[in-house]
Image 1: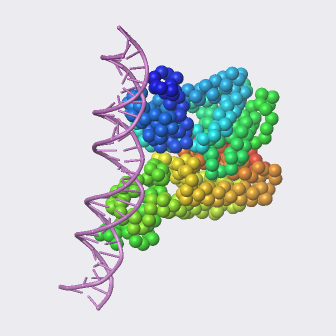
Image 2: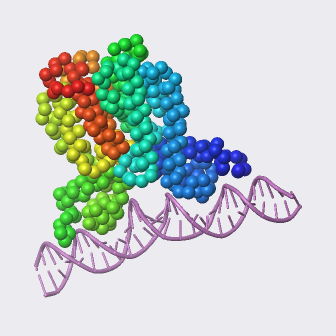
Amino acid sequence: MTVDGRLARGQRTRTAVLDAAVSLASANGLDGLSLGHLAESLGVSKSGLFAHWRSKEELQLATIDRAVAQWQEQIIGPALRAPRGVRRIHALHEARIDFYAGRVLPGGCFFATTEFEFNARPGAVRDRLADVFAAWTRFLERLVTEAVELGELPAGTDVALLAYEIDAHGIAAAMRSRLLDPEVTYRHARLGVLGRLRALCPDPALLPEGTS
Amino acid sequence: MTVDGRLARGQRTRTAVLDAAVSLASANGLDGLSLGHLAESLGVSKSGLFAHWRSKEELQLATIDRAVAQWQEQIIGPALRAPRGVRRIHALHEARIDFYAGRVLPGGCFFATTEFEFNARPGAVRDRLADVFAAWTRFLERLVTEAVELGELPAGTDVALLAYEIDAHGIAAAMRSRLLDPEVTYRHARLGVLGRLRALCPDPALLPEGTS
DNA sequence: AATGTATACGACCGGTCGGTCTTTTTTAGT
DNA sequence: ACTAAAAAAGACCGACCGGTCGTATACATT
């Protein structure tokens, strides 16, 4: 342990370091995350980080895992408390928008940023990101499939396409943090998926009011 | 001039360098574009680049301008050859998709990549990118406004929102080059905007067949 | 062919990066 | 209070970055 208990061994402090890493990486990217800057922002020497993670890549992987955990706690969790079907899809989407709308730091979604960085760079980080995205896609498709099975969406719904649309709308909302009108971005994110669901769902009472 | 005439002064070779810069920057980002790598890929010494551009930032700005020129030649131009209204909007969207679908290099859209990089980094490059995006948004909104004025879209259409949707669909198509199913990406990009226009346009004969 | 000039090149500079190593400080046990 | 173990700190390394400079070379003119 350290003098002031700010960091060092122990799971609690480890996640504190990773939370800072997620925050910095969301703004500057997982590569742009300099170990020196990270250490400085934590009030720690750079070499101290190497006591807990052997290399930068290992810290990057741990950072991804931490971001996934945050994602599950703050987005997946609330969505699963809504009833199955289109209401759960809608709740998930709202949770995503709230999650990013509440962010003070620029850079938008951690995963959108890192995806751009490692898109064309093979390696362990890219593989991990691919796994995360595959799981996220499967989760979205499962939610859409459930809504179809409940009769809340038409039987012929293109599950993969609708899941992609839901995802893409949220990504677009997260990525344009500065250069475009944030009010339009917000309207697009809120109304895009909602309007799509309302157009497909035969029971309008399941979704709140709103036009797209 | 050089021995083999591959580059050096003259507008033609200058644009050749910038085309290579656009290509590399699309994959690795405008910052990740190392002057050493760019020079090596062109068979030129790094210092030779500084004879034509004083600094990396100046070359980055020139690269942006070159990408804009490519954009106008290959996307804006074909779209303007289509009749005003929803058909022009659709033609523009098709040209974008074809443009990126034909790319062999990964990384997707040059502007999407660079936007992520310079989103939160003030400077001349960010300002230039902001200008490009503002002009692009104005162009899209003008196309939508024209379609409304022609009666091909409802009078109450939310121009800014629809323009944003058209843009976001294309961005989403360009960005997910590796980690997600490209076939779904393509379907989403093709059918998303088309379905949106068909839902809004009272005259279905103006648009090709297709479901979303 | 000789010469003057423009130009491309290799070497080099300061700075930052990820990563290692040695030293110093702090903690825990007796 | 003394010692041993653990850990944080800081100096340091090689590699790479953007950028500069002196030099060698190839061209154009006469």
